[in-house]
Length: 586
Image (cartoon, rainbow, N blue to C red):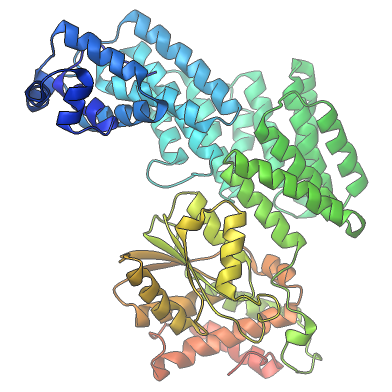
């Protein structure tokens, strides 16, 4: 519960604001004259109520509900001054702070993110960093670490105030205090973020270094070794997968020697997924059975992870796929219930790969000869086009995400991920239907996209729908109308689309809505991964060729701004057209 050591006019004003009282209403609530409240507030941090009023304010704060107390702490944080924070912490306060950090850690392990954050925030509100000695600095750094863990587990990895920023600040504190083990442990936490962000090979190399780092204790080095395997298991190459299994097995032996039963159980889960990636489904099921039978951690997070791992294995075998979807649905529902946003996103990616919803049915394809096959040389040329089509924009906070409708439901999933990670406060899905989507999305692309985003945990109130557009120019112009009608005038947007459509979408938005700051983003998929999702290499190459033709031709027709096309890309395009990849040309 929030506490105040000595009430000033600043804290009194914060309490009134948190309780949502007017000056007159607050005075009536306290049983004092309105002019007294006005006097307190006008004096701010230099005015202190009488002792009887101090006790009265204590009583009002203690009776406030959790929401009001949270608002009070935030108001104090935004208005605190040197005067109100001049007194140094006392010993009992440090002891209470330590207790609160232990409670926050327990709340975090149970995925009670709100409770953990409240326990952490009260100390950031109470003390400035400059008011603290080394003991207080240590507690401040530990608070930063726990705050980073909250944000990491909720999927807020990067950006202002995100987990990466918080862990980096904590690392600087530990380094300044000369606490090497805490510095190294924070290094480990920062590498975990890189792995979660998809930088798996870089993360594996950094984990390997930390697995030998003498600053860490034996358990932490074993964890780093385990995470070497976790990262390598996501590379999806046989050599990397075999190295992953070796690292995980070695980590498992260390955990067994240390008597770390919980870590050993998690290792079995990781081994299950690595064997699944190798196609060894029977060993994978054996390892996941062992992990579930020996689990120590009964938290929602670990329940979701185990369920997701089992579902991933079951979905890899057509005979057990229905059971896999059932298990995956249970894991998804639990993840949504506990606001485990990174897990929700991961589950969506597994579902998208197991249900190739962007795969076009044969009757939906243009009627053309299928005699053209994709040779290694064609693939090299297609890779060149693939990389050109992607703008290389990094994800930054924006006013809105605009999801461009198509046959690819992954666009909706990625837009939802951006929202859940805190990059945007609003999503607009735009698109009617086309010849290739009318059967799949009979209610319209935008409507089905919205349904997928809601399924992944985005509130209805954070989604707008534009259901009429039938081309990219209309997607942009009609989205602008929808936003204006709803009272929004964004200055920046994340334009979410298929990976190979980024450049054309950017050129179109630049033409149709020139004063909107646009960054084009897509789910981070390689050419090979996207082709596997589509299920037809020939079709993917056709689409790459067709989009480049539009990038080249549409500026002259007034549909888009001109884009520089390197000579090697034009040459690759010409070769693919000559080879017969022309089904998507206009």
